[in-house]
Length: 403
Image (cartoon, rainbow, N blue to C red; front, top):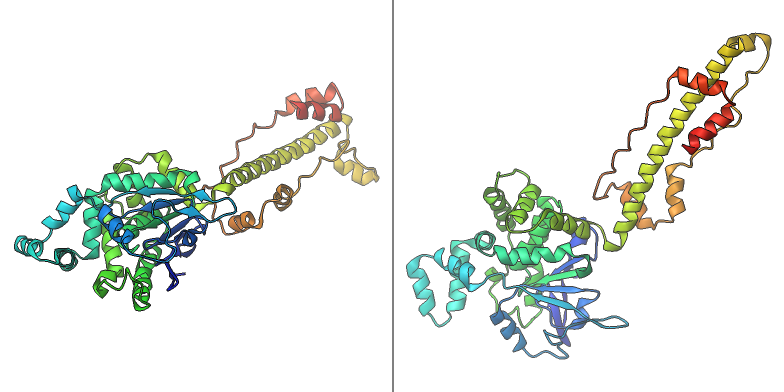
């Protein structure tokens, strides 16, 4: 739903489920423009608000029917719960704001400051001299503490589902969402595709008369693919080692600004796999590892059975070929070994939901299955012969199973 709005009560626009669009788990990560009504938030647990104080003041001055307080948003459930709202100014005056001004020619900047509509003229100077890709470059260089604070929120599973927004949900939100997607291994073309969706959604809201969007020029609502391409390329350049992979560059950038390996790993698990399925996924990994180990042990025991049978025939003075010639049956081990159920039956035994089975079939598990442990080699024929002489095969096998 790109424009969740009507004239009876403004809610938001440019709203979408990023995880579903990017091929990850749905209903975990959302993005949007400003949010005005609690009913818009659905099942959201944490709102990451990237606006400046000035932006919030301008939003609160606009009158809307049944508008919810920006500081008292509640999740609409049977038992309403206060939503955790985290304010992070992604473009602080110092150093990010000053760095942006320095990228504008001096005389042009002075003229903009002296103008009555200096805010709009300054934004157009940034647009014409830097572009939206250049804006992202300045934030990557100068807003690192704010980016680090925002990314750390994704390492805590209790924060999900998370909604990220600023004014348009395009520039500041677009940069943070792009970093999260790249860190989680989403292909750059998918990241670019998600970024470019904002322009159509915002211009649609403007055409419908959305009060906060009608005052903006069309160039302010643009989200060209070239801007995100420039951002990803710049991320590779500034990252130590200059990795070719966008995912490696994004993760290295996260480490360089203060995230730990554990926090990045937790972020990947939380975004790529729903929090309530992680324990079941780990149980399934352990199950498959156990099955593989049992399968190898079963094969080893069968090989031992065949070797012990050959030794028994040798000591009894007969062979399988002699029994076949005389029409007699050789004495095989006392009882067959119990068979193991196939892995599909083991999965059914756990009664895992259909979602888990789908993840397995599509190979979407976060971590690969660990290699099964190595088993001990079979005992030598001499030791087997000694055991056979001192008891029956059934007694020896029972002792082996107990050990």
